[in-house]
Length: 59
Image (tube, rainbow, N blue to C red):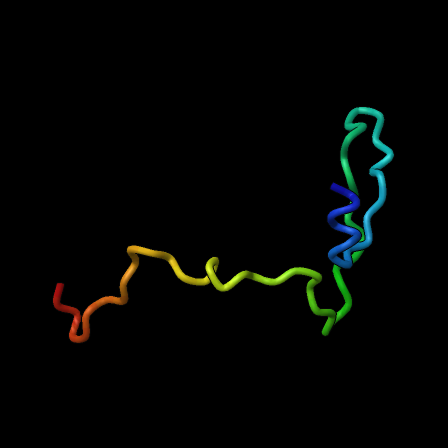
């Protein structure tokens, strides 16, 4: 999880808590204006079977 967050631009470190050894501490988010290293594919933007509501609110 730390590697995923770091690759997205977050600053992370181990929480150093003996009762929660797997916990991470997020120190900072990505800097303003940083573009994510991923993007949505075209097929992820359309949902088959979903349609816009008809004009005028009639079903």
